[in-house]
Length: 431
Ligand code: DGY
Image (tube, rainbow, N blue to C red; front, side, top):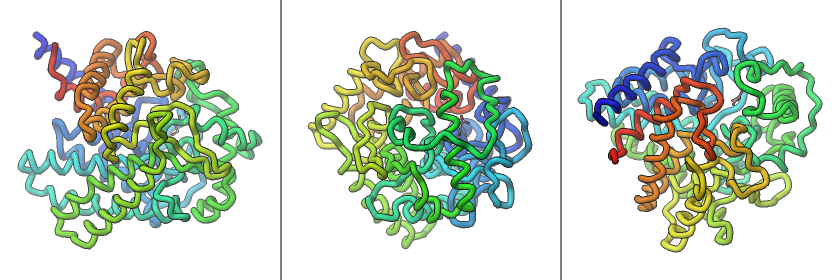
């Protein structure tokens, strides 16, 4: 019976991906996000790889149609027009072959590529090397871009220049840094998101004013990375971004070897060492987690958000750090119906329904579960994974979940939640 239920749910998850398929790429959800998003698609590719390797490759191939000549993979690729989203291509004003946004998003791409490649090899797919090679080259170009454009001072940490780049748009982690960004905009703000989802679950208008102010000033720089770096009032060396980049770098190394690219394998190993050393310097014993660095003020960002645990995907902690981080994660989940809240429930900034200020995100749990396993914190990993799978089974493939009630929130029939279910539920032992 349990097996049959799981099979049905897998069918439902695949149906979500099919419904959001727009021809080789998948929108995160209909109307609210009607284009191809960077890290969404990387997670989605892994979901597809559980049952259709060809389609998984296709998702990544379509994403790099948007890759810029300097290596950046933009956060949105506007393959086809839609008027249900703001800001559209006219606001970004970029000059790529096809319209894209001008900022990026967490480079889960490298992790996804390894996952898809290994699924292809396991399925005996003959053309796996030929399919993987150009995607590997695209990933390497993008990692080089990250280090050059976003760590010019060689800290071993990459910076975001816009909260949208983090994927955690309105996280309390950005509150202080974002407060320095003026609210005046040249662009008229015509929000569409609050027409699809209740405003109480979305960023506030004042957040949007600052988000668009940043877009305006970067567009005025002609999207030149050096000019953006020098004018930006918002510059944060983000441990979530760096953790994902470091992990994706590690995942590209076996692919380089499989492709016979020895020089690239050595380059990636060096990059990986550099990033993990940078991350290790961001661990804070009293907080029992990692902290980002505000590059404008020079201060640690201590707001308790999920970002502090993401470096586990890349860094091997010592025994004391392992027990500390496990205890901290358990503290955040204590009394919650579903963990892990994206902002600690004991924080004054905690809002259980508002986007990145409290809700649980399946893909974040997916990363944290992987990070716990990298660090052999296996029991906690399994319980977080089981809780995530149950939350999806009970509330559906929602964008995010209220940790205090388990209620599904935001957009529904969400692609990356379906992908998370396809990957995580296979590892969960029923009971
Ligand atoms: C949005 O528009 O809400 C997105 O998160 C930006 O990528």
